[in-house]
Image (cartoon, rainbow, N blue to C red; front, side, top):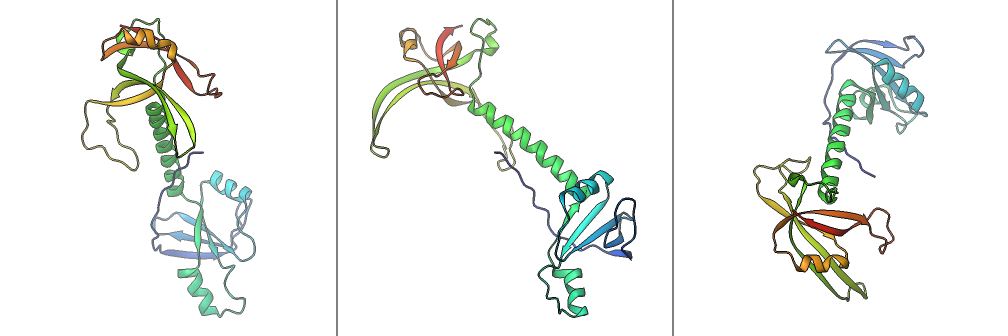
Length: 233
């Protein structure tokens, strides 16, 4: 599961023309007030029940801002002054719907989609049609490595069958990392079948080549691919 979030700092807003339980079309908010930007704000006071999902969706469809103020933890014997202080200042509150929240949600979803695509492009080697003679789609193969060993950490044997290839160095920033300058290539790895060893042994590296990927049936995963053929350009 992928997720993203956006921090919105709190701020003080000035309200005027506050109205109590004004009947609107299809609903009746606890309070309604006009904001500094002249937009109307509906306010719900939570005591025992919070604003439900259906009401939240309806408010978004109305494109009308709504704020919920949570007084559920306030003592039922609180004085008028204490209730006033809670409502105006320290009681928890959040927007059920706001134009800014909607805008941030759209931006966060857009940024997340772009980031996921970028990461997936980095970790998934390009799957090239080996019969395509377009050199621009060829991989830059740097070398290969086969071997085996024993892991004391996992108490098990392991095999190494790696094809090393180059990709352009990361050039665009992400949400948590800003690229100020970059160039050249980065080294990546992908699994390669032992059946390719004779062909690899005859090659001089680095070189451009097309590769054929197939599902790695030995691993048992339908999503893991392995190089089964290499065609030098």
